[in-house]
Image (cartoon, rainbow, N blue to C red; front, side, top):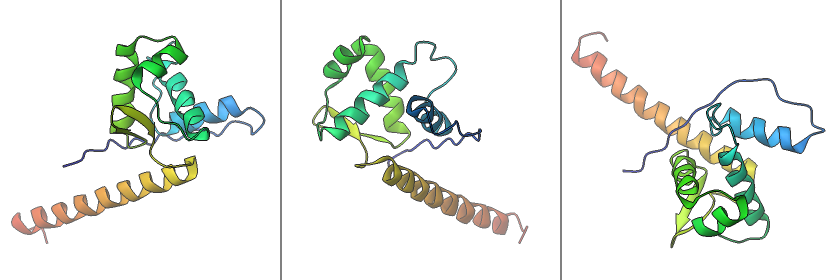
Length: 134
């Protein structure tokens, strides 16, 4: 069974004049970048993966560590978080964003969320029936 952690955080969108702030908002809205990430290491990894996407290149954790100046352990920790959120995939120890652009990633996350809500609703209905609440 595949697990995907879906987090959506509502906040005001930044002005469209600063791509960096828009990218931070995008990832923050998906719950990817926490306030505990003081050195923005997860955001930096996300940016490297975006660059890899633009170059049509999958990257190893070592390559990401080298490009970000982070330890491989830190990179692997954040890659695991990004994979559990459903936006990063791993193939043959190389990592890339799940789809070839951010809009498609959002659409896939929405599909994942819709499927999770439907399963949750079905289980709720079954429990209601067993408890005589229907």
